[in-house]
Amino acid sequence: MRRRLDWGEHPRDRKLPAHPYRDTALVYLGFAVLIVVVALATGGGLLRAVVIAGLFWICATGYGMLGQRRRRRARERGRLR
Image 1 (cartoon, rainbow, N blue to C red):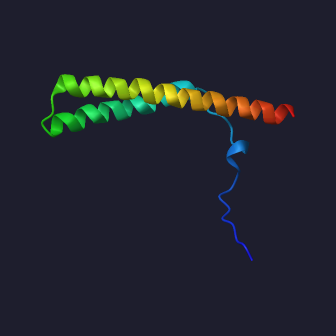
Image 2: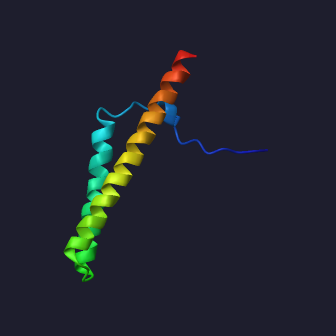
């Protein structure tokens, strides 16, 4: 007999956040700031940390927004079919 965990509602049934793109950008901005803080706390260079954190923020935010867009399109297709 197989047993499954029940975590409540399915992710497809959850309500979308009001501003998913802004939320994604803010979360990754927080991670970028954390990169700079850790670099400074461990004796790294400020300029190098800011450049790396900026590149991380751009790449991660772009990837996150693409994922949001893919999920939104998949939900729309699922509802239309």
